[in-house]
Amino acid sequence: MENRNLTTYAALAGGLLLANRMRKRRQQGLLDAVEDTAGTRRASGPGLLSLAALVGGGLYLSRKLRQGPGAGSASNVQESIELDVPVSTAYNQWTQFEEFPKFMATVEEVRQLDDTHLHWRAIVAGKSKEWDAEITEQIPDERIAWRSTDGVTNAGVVTFHRIGDSRTRVMLQMDYEPETLTEQVGDAVGGVKLTAKGNLKRFKELVEARGTETGAWRGEVAAH
Image 1 (tube, rainbow, N blue to C red):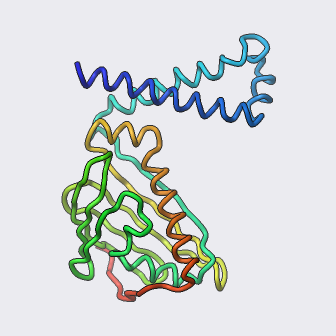
Image 2 (image 1 turned 180 degrees about the vertical axis):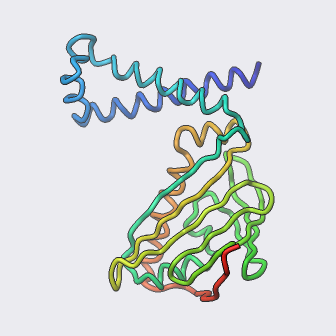
C-alpha cells in the first residue's frame, strides 16, 4: 500500500511539474498562439492546457513507474556541448578520471585502480552508492567507452569531435537503469538528463577557465 501511495503522489508531482512548465511558457507568450489556433483558450479558458499537462504528465509518470526496474525501464541520456579548446585538450582532461568530482555534481570520488578499471562513489537519489567500472574502448581524441562491472548498472560513451583548431564538441551517451522507486521518479521527470547537462556545462567551464589540461593519458584500449 505504501508503494502504491508513493507512486500516486509521484505521478501527481510529475503532472504538476509539466503543468508548471507550461504555465511558465504561457507567461513568456509561447503558448498563446497555440491556444488561439486550437481554440482552447477562447472555448475553455486558459486552464485547459494546464489541466491536460497535469493529467498527461501524471499518466506518463505512472506508466514509467509501473514498468519497474528490470522491465525495460533503462534510461538513455544523450547530451552534447561545445568547448572553446582544441580536441586534444578536451580529451586529455576527460582522461583524468579522479578529477571528475570537480565537475560532476553527484560524484563524490573516483579512484583509478589501473589503466582500465575505476571505482566510483556517488550520490544516487539521495543515497551514497559505490560501483566498479571498466573502460571498454579508448581512442585518443575520439572516444572513451565504459560499463559498470558491479553495483549501479550503467554504461556509456563520450566522443570528441573537432570543429576547428580551438573548438570541440563533446557528446555524452549513457544508459542507466534505475534501481529504486525514487530513482525511477527522478528518471521520469528528467533528473538524469538534467544532471548530465549540468555536468557537461561545468566541464566546459573548468577546461575553458584553465585553457589547458591538468594531465593526460594517451594510451589506447581495444574495443571489447
